[in-house]
Image (cartoon, rainbow over all chains, first blue to last red; front, side, top):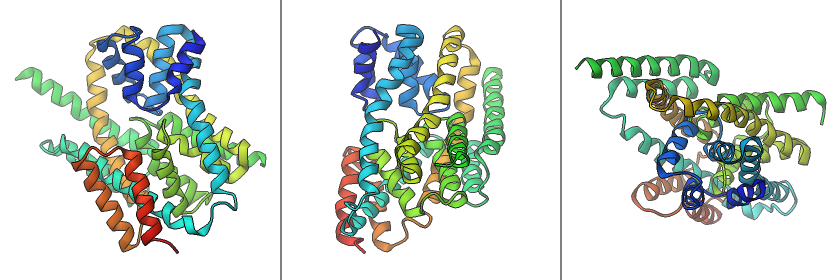
Length: 171
Length: 176
């Protein structure tokens, strides 16, 4: 069991791959997978790792969770370790620094796209939009610590969600 | 590696692990503020490069902590950074996963998801501002970033390919 889970998660790529591996194998139904995604995205930690731990636990208990964890982390760890070895070695020649700076700029561009994409579903909700702006400002300008941010902005967000649910129920 | 440094690595990444609501994307601004601006483990430019490598490699983007750890203390630093980053959140997930199934359809599940969403989106905007600060600050860099953003929104080109193409553009336009 341990080996099966670990080697399945081993492909290690994206959510879609894990979905295919688990749903097609009959380990989880489509519905259970959607439920899994819900908690996985809510809990702290990398979504992919959380998903592997959650599915592993359902299939094989504690050992299954460990298998899922290792399966989804070991390969990326080894790859990045090799990259690190190269990065901090003399083989990281100056000629490649432009390429690395280009990759960094590209990653920033992806972040911009991601931010725009995520914001669109909040555009018609002024309170949520204000919270998004306030969160961004608090970090970028005032360097507010993540813990404070979660307490304040998360708290306000939840208060807003509670009020919105009540209003929807009353209507 | 000194004991103090070891402890600091565990504190920084362990804290981020426990506070990483919404997956990796919410923790990068705090990681950059800790590792670059507070502890000076690496430069702003290096952090942005590691961030890109994390997106390039298959698996969780937060795996880039291995590079930060490796830069400070070699293999041991890499291993400790990864353990501190992934183990605490996984233990929490393990416990929560068992509880979660018992509350199927409970309203607090939706409220938590809806309530945290603006925080996470705000943190992605913060990532953009904080990570690019001191790292992407040339006209050519802005052009690459803007082009990638547009391509990502308008086409279905896979993320790693976009980063690789940015690398080629960078080699041509950003070489020192």
